[in-house]
Structure formats: C-alpha cells, structure tokens
Length: 372
Image (tube, rainbow, N blue to C red; front, top):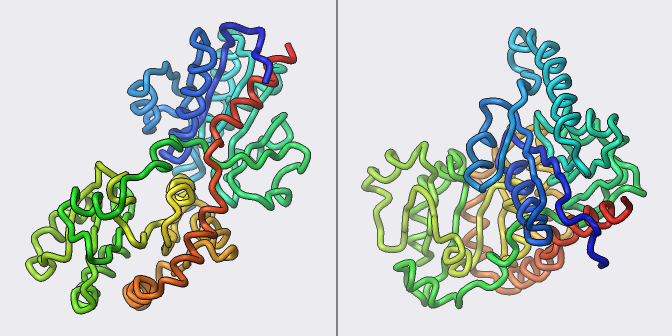
C-alpha cells in the first residue's frame, strides 16, 4: 500500500468500559505508531472506568468524558443520564475543535458514542470496530456515521450497511498466539506430566463461578480418568478453592491467574473458556479443541451469540451456563478421549482465525488518510 503523505496524523481513539473494548483500541494505536512514529494519538474514555488506568500504562494520553451506560436494573440510577450525555457531547465537541483529528476510531463502550458522533458531525472520518457477533448499542447507533465498520464475524449485514463492512477479525497481538512452544515441553515447564492429557480451564481474571463449581464437583471424575486439569480460578474464589483439601491432587494444578498463558495454551489438549470476543479471537489462532461456556449476563447476551457463531461452524462445543455443572465434566472427558472430534474442532476453529486483523484495520485507516 502507498504510504500516507501525512507524517504526523492526528488520531482519536475511543473505546472502554471493558478490556474487550480497550485492548483492541490499544492494539490499533500500537500499529499506527509503528507506521507513523510521529502520529499524535489521543484516547477518549469514560471517567472512572478502567481505560483511565490501562491506556496511560500503555503509553498513551487519555481524556475522560462524564458518561455511563443505561442501568437496566436500577431505573433511578438513570436520572442523571441526560445530563451526562449533554456534558459528554459538549466536551467531545471541545476536544474535536481543539485537537483537530484527521480520523477517529471507535471500538465500542460508553465514551465512544458521543465522541464518534461529534467527530462525524464535524466532518472527521470515523471507523468503528465491532468485536462481537452481536453488536453493542454504541456501534449500532454509529453505523450511519462511519465510513468503515470492521467486524470479527461474518454475516453482519443484518446489523450494518453491507458496503461498509470489512471482515477483518479482532485486533490482538497475533504473534503471541501463533508460535506456541512444543506441547510436551510446555507441560514440563508448567510442572505437569507430559504424557497425560490436559484440560485448560480459563474464566477470566475475576474467574467464573460456574466453571469453579463444575470442577469442584467433577474433580474426582477427572482423577478417575487420569486427566490433568490446569484450573485458573480467578481472584474472587481463589482462597476458597485453594484451601479446599478435597481438591488437592497431583493431577490438578490450581492457580489464581495464569501469567504464562502461552505455555498454558501450548500445553493444553483441550480448552474450556468463557466466550468473550477477545478470548475467542485468541482461541481461533491457537487452534486447540475448545468448549465454550458463555457468561449469560454479558450485555445483550453477546457471549452466547459469539459461541453460537463457532458452534454453527463445528469450531467449538457450546455448553450453556445453566447446563455446565451437569454436562461439562462428562463432555470434556469424552472430548479428551475422542481424537477424531478433536481434529475436526481444531481444523474448523483454525479456519476462523484472522491473524492480520490489526494490520488490515490500519490499512483502511492509512487508505483514508491518503485521500487528504
């Protein structure tokens, strides 16, 4: 692609509320910086949300808007929402007038809505990136304002104008997940038996109560079948689980958080995971047989829709949260023993991988900058 004539483009990036919105934005920013070292990048987030901490740690400036989402569980909490929205639109206007961005990129979340809307109305080209198979409210509202909509799933024309859709995948550090260590060596490195099958269970940094309850009740079945379990509990239930003497066994390795996730992915024979968008993007690159147990209370139940997109392609096994304690252990054991099904799932999930997502998204950004 022809390099942009702009040496130091001014870029606004807005996404937050959850890591699923923040980390794609940071990945995009890093790729922009690699192409345009003198680019002036400004993040816009929501005051008091996690992006106000995570983005500066990644090395970028961020400004916060006074904005939050609609609280469906507590209607009284929404009384301030109109004032927050007006305040955020006004502040977004001030930021746009002062910063004068060449392009604005939204990855979803509370602040992304007012920031991208104002930027578009000011004539700034807007690109939005949707991580999930069921779009969030913010990105659905912005579909008319964007010149490009980058998605992680196909069949998104029912939500967005087809001529704007680019099926890029989610922007992540693909290199971290594509060159894994050899499996037996990874097992040894983690203190596991290299000759015994391993289930890796990950439920996020906070953990999954459903997965934790499942393994607590099903641990003996794994032991009886000589199956190892690398079990990330998350911090909320770590102390309770780690102090349970009934769960102590040489086949079971319990940890609050897995820092060397590459080693864990490499060591695994099968993976059990929640179905967040970024987790699934990693899993498609890893290509291991996977069982997905979606978190049912995610916004608009998007994790279930993410998992369905894979299960419909025979790329993962889907077990609902309410059925997990009854079905998950037996399903995992059966999958460990069924090499044919493992191969089918592995091949199909690899076919969904989009290792060049970040590059492809920034190609679109650079192409737009070339129009100036």
